[in-house]
Length: 116
View 1 (cartoon, rainbow, N blue to C red):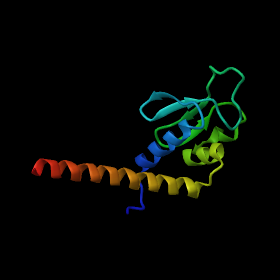
View 2 (view 1 turned 120 degrees about the horizontal axis):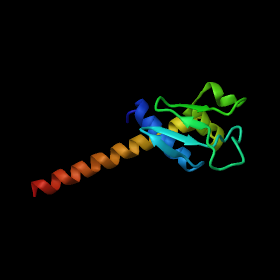
View 3 (view 1 turned 180 degrees about the horizontal axis):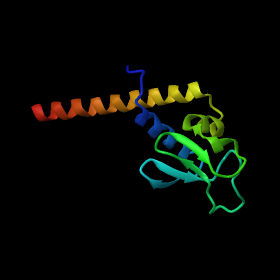
View 4 (view 1 turned 90 degrees about the horizontal axis):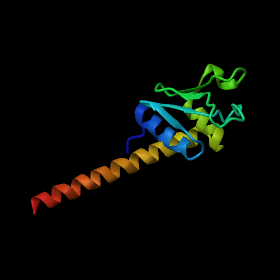
């Protein structure tokens, strides 16, 4: 089992997990906007000042928010889910291993079908 994840696989996993905790709106390739779960952003649901950048950094542009300087997305997920960063990385590794297993199983079945 591969215990090392590439940055893209980790970011995809974290974005998928964040979607179960908060509403994310995609505004570009691997770029999302949301209401900041740390500072509460605003009372107006249409105003969103939290951005997840393609680099894997979360920034809130609401003045005075602690995320204003940028947080790694794994820290944001840890904040909203209550899970530790280690638990999140562990979940990402398990998810990646499960994906590889399903992919390898599918390829094996396809090869066996073509032989018959």
